[in-house]
Image 1 (cartoon, protein in one colour):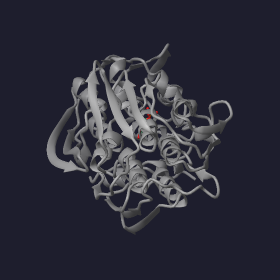
Image 2 (cartoon, protein in one colour):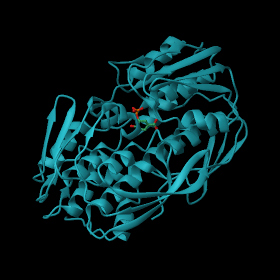
Image 3 (cartoon, rainbow, N blue to C red):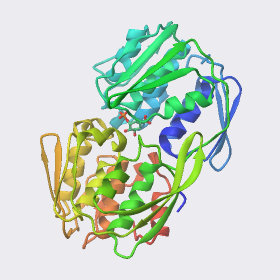
Length: 421
Ligand code: S3P
């Protein structure tokens, strides 16, 4: 199976392309609703993002000078688009109003607006939520330690720092995905990254102007996760998932599955846009339960719903620790994941910040409330493939925010997924 383009890298390719001097050519762009919202936003700020073929786009950059947005920028369901673009817009000194759908409007924005205000951004928002109005201002560098492990927060600050005067330092207690740092270097930026304990210190002195380059988006390990877990829990499966990005800041799920006894082989396949990629061969495996430490969370933050599905078929009781950040995702993913399993007869309970799951046979037959969350919908459908009575979900339309080809890809692998009305 060809893995769809990585969502995080796709957003960043469009945003850095829009900030750069010159025209960037991007191939393998994930054309999902979230990423298309970012393409639309950068175009309305004066960059011109255009599709020249399937997954192939060009972005004519602004050289760091965005225009004021004439109307609100709508990021739909996408926290990554909204939060990274707040940093990018603030750094260019442009004005824009940020809005999103009901789910995004319920998610915390203060984690990004607070450091941006410290840098000098003029921001009006009520109670930590969208809509956010960002008004033109000049920025200065800051020395900042984000209170939550978040690549979105780090990235927003680094993008703003490109247009700020002086040095910006971001001190991460726990290293999060580093695609922004890698791609900034591809665009010619001068920044340093230093390890410190479990974390990293990133330094960037502004102002700096990026230079456009060509990019090839690697496959998304978070999207590949669904087919990987399906193959593990369905007896007789043997699938190859092609060109999956293997950046260690994204492969926590695969490490966890390996510890559970999963038969997954990584066949290195070179690089795409500075990121290592591999073809993954996944064969059905008898899994055993895992006690998963909280430190691994940043490297698999989006994969807990589908890991929970794997745990529901593993021998023994798993404990997935330290999941409070899941409550700030597209839905309260901790509650939604537990409810998804419980509705289908699997034994799952929340204990403080931990999710406990006892594996075995899953009766299925339940209807899963997705709360409009794409990863809950996809995880539930994977659960349904191996549960005795199948699983139904209340909505699949939002799967297009991250993985528009999900149903087609899973069907091609042998899944039977059908509309019931
Ligand atoms: C992302 C970072 C993560 C992740 C999201 C994508 C990114 O969010 O959940 O899907 O592209 O930087 P946080 O930074 O909020 O952890």
